[in-house]
Length: 487
Image (cartoon, rainbow, N blue to C red; front, top):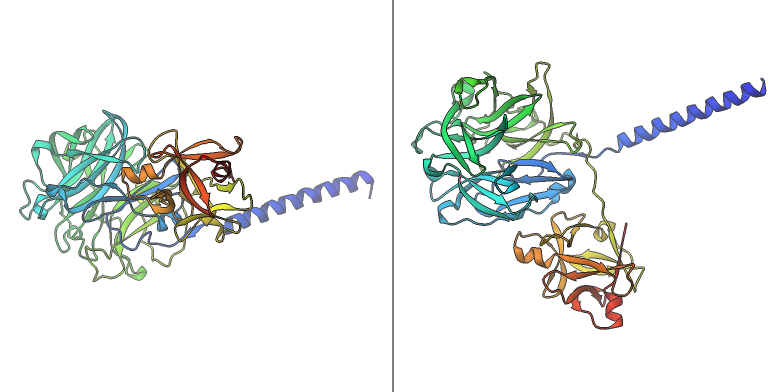
């Protein structure tokens, strides 16, 4: 063998080994892909979910106020996330039957804002109307303020409000009846939105229970949800009575040019998502849709029961699964999967960056939570107890808050000057207590100190290894109040 040939052979062998190593690495990465099983919560009817700026957000029916929202960077985190109150304004005329909250990001009169559409009334179901709350900024977690009853002077009976934009015009879809609640069969209606919180003009009924599969228990069309794909607009809706195992999804498509014309909508004659007895899934319905983090996958979120005997109450839990598209451009939702089915998490899911806080004068110790108390320890076990996400301050821009990695929705806050880990309760006081200004370290400007938002003369510091906020007046205090933000 010539030297030149031997060198060529060795080079080829090296390339093959590199390729093999790459394949093994890729295979290992694929084998380690995160998975999950349903449900996302033990009780969660009428779910609405989206992925926005690195986080999943989820709302479900609360029956009474307040409205709550869960937030997490991963599906695993969402399962453990605290249900944070985001809207608490529930006077007597709308504090009963608080159902089906949906949140939509709309560029309205006040600029881009999140709007929650929810159903509520007074003492009886005949009082149900769709109400709207508006976020103060662009954070889905709010805070929110009440904007009004969306039907205005019309005072139509209605539940399950949802929003669609078609040709740059926004419309409201909901489940309603021709007049007031008199036992009429609820149907799907549409009207133009003049503002995000008020309709304008006449309404049009675009679907009513007409097929046998829409009439099990009680004739019902409710829970409209919009799905737009490749220039086409579809609307799923829930059919039949939610107290039966035959609650299911039907499908409409906008096949005409005028959404306010009933003739512009075409209904599929068969259901598109229904019970799967072999998988132990009953009454799947009242759904929403969301994209995977990388935008390549379409997912459906819905509620379902584990037994045919379970009905319209708290037994329903929140489930998700990916769906695909048929060759003719229509959605293919498949069948609802069992709770034992292991599913890959939505594509592109990843944990956002997190940090540790290292003590300046005890550099082998790091800030951690332990039984919801906050302290500095040398050996943090489990390690995630010592990791936090530095997120924009809950109380204002230019500040930071510390969100726990393994308890999403829980933040470091001071209570009677002592630091604790607590779930965000949505109040202005919590936001203020959990917000700090990051400034150059009081003991070393290359490190950091954290000034309390609502007690600006006090700083985060450790005292006998426990964290609190105190005025800082001594050299020791400056050292205790200085930390390094590390990875």
